[in-house]
Image 1 (tube, one colour):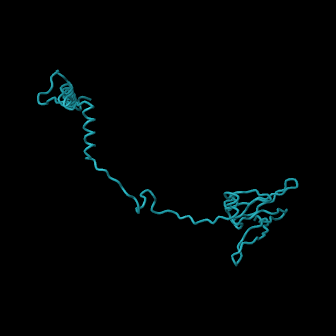
Image 2: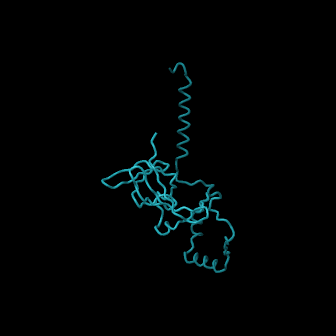
Image 3: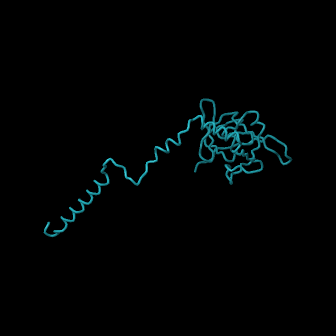
Length: 189
């Protein structure tokens, strides 16, 4: 192997010797500092040492001389920079008499009767209950006197084939009147 590259062995030794000499001279220490560098760290340390009382007096003097200007910002009439520029406007929802008397709306009161679908009527003993689904296929079980629909509807009666709901609607003259609706089970196809 050495016969093919006779100078390789010598070149590798020269490179190793050069690296070794650089490391030794760079890392070596003879205890002397270089003469062209001046050690000013001791001078700086002693010059910058002030008693804390002196520093506190200087700060107090600076504050007493009003060298710091007071600045105030009046935001009246200016937009809030943290509010998004584009927001979704929620339409105002009219509250009904039932909502103000009975408290917040139940999930069934947030839908119109057209958005609810009667899926099943369940008989338990002599009592009947009905199963309604919303548009997301989430089910609600109702019994008589359950509030349903966004027009203040009340389940008046549940029969084996339909549910009778009484709700408040406005007629053509704007007067509030009771409307009775009968909802039958929708056929499953």
